[in-house]
Length: 163
Image (cartoon, rainbow, N blue to C red):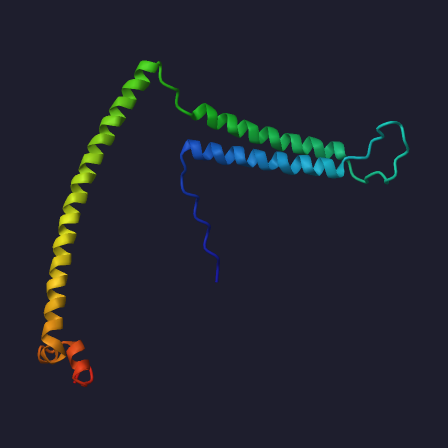
């Protein structure tokens, strides 16, 4: 059975893509610095003799490869930054946008309060109806429920369901 092709990743907004790219750059820096600390050849601090044997691979080539990866990641981040929309022209425009957003928020809050009041009223009515029905069922007892043909009444009367 052949494997299904991988679905393309869902589109993300620019800010999320930029955050993910910066996280990748951060991970590269963390890993590359750790590798350089681990793999770099030992250096004498005060001219003393080195105890460990030198490494057998080219640290300079590894460093250049790491630097090219980091530069490619930074170029991608710069490309994403360039795609971000420009900021507003002035503080007055930002204040006007904030006022509009506050008005929309107030309207939405009023609508939600109205919906909550209507839902609370409906809930109260339903709770009252449930109370009336529950009280009636308790007052009539199992025999009345059995006569009505309900499953609880049949079980109380000792009958099998469906008989």
